[in-house]
Picture (spheres, rainbow over the protein chains, first blue to last red):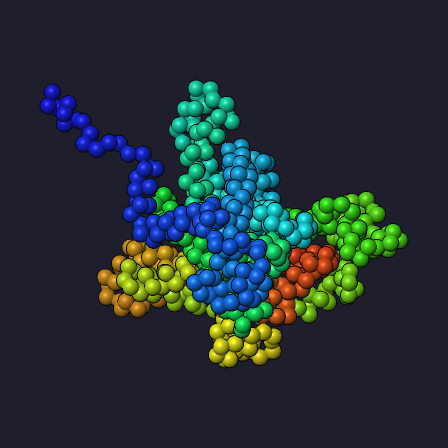
Length: 292
Length: 310
């Protein structure tokens, strides 16, 4: 009887995911990032309640009124409240960035899964196409896509999404290549699982960690790129309270109104930094060897 | 060395299909426009049918697709990228006029990013977990989180309008280059600093570093001659990737600082749907980027002989 008591585990067996989450919870920077991000997301969801003014309403104050209690971030050329516009802007930027990342990761992961699992000519074809997409540096491909489809918020999602597909495909493919050598894959095959089941139910969960990390950092990247496209006049059109568009509108008035360019930019930085901190923390907690 | 030349040849051969693929993508830009390209291009001027017809003729849109592509390739091989639809100047001329300024900006920003990245990343690794490390890495995170066009506006406000030290735009003297260079290189410096730090930390744990220290070498020699050299290998790859990022960044930087260059020309061409110019610039930038990555891979193989046998 005593030996049975000795054999009883003193600690409950813990899944790697739970261990990693615990590691993550101990990282101060990541937790601060998460906290800030939650606040920003809440503010964007409850923008109607948080923002004191309608983001499009003109003449809520005088033109270019400096920050005071009435207008925390001041007003812009048309007397619109910059604080309200910035809050509503987070709704646009976050949803557009999430949409772009979702689009890119779904296509990228699927392609990577198929390329890595089946190999052969499919792998060749997919990876060469990815090489070609990667051959266009930075924002140029996104600009090219927007130039074809015309400037709009929806097309920015597509442009930013397409440009980030290769990262997902390459990472997932690499992970699949090593994951499919595992014994449990052979076991699944022996008991007669179809390829689709093996791919989606057995391999996918094991390559998900890098995808989550990539997606988190991808949101930061997407926010930066979408605001950059808007700043160039190729994203959200002017009345929209998009951060990049707001900066574009007030960049000519730097001397008169420093607040009109400072606060939307600060908000981009804050959001991107929170996401980056969280992404870095996730990477360190889940997969410190991952070079992203 | 035989393996080296073999590696280079193999690596160059890989470029050929990519190059062909690039031409296909750039060529199909014309046909991916929803609707009839000629009509879309002329839409804002409410063109008469015969004008649309003339443009279709000029762009060769009436020919079968494969003939159009072959013509496009043939023209490319003869250094002919077509003409701007608005100024009617040859695209090659527009490019050769604007390329030097863009390269000047991108290369100087690259230099700055590498120097700052090495210094800050090195400091972070050497003083790991001290306040210096924390400060440097916090700066780096701030660096990669700031949108470059915003940094540009802040710098213009502070250094040009407030202090009056540096010109807010234009070009010509080195003083004009400072702000755009810092703005463009800022992000890459942060990326490189983070990489240098983690790469150096990994190398410092290696046994040959312990050996070097054990035989009594000074810390500086250990660091500079033994550790840094090996830590630089991954940095070179990322520097290559960052160069592409910088080329893309010139679009924003040149626009904010009203600098002449390919990025700004590209933005204008996109707004006015001047497709031949867009095609020419996109193709050129992609080819430059491809060559840089080729160079990086070859350098890499020189530094790390294991690569050649993969």
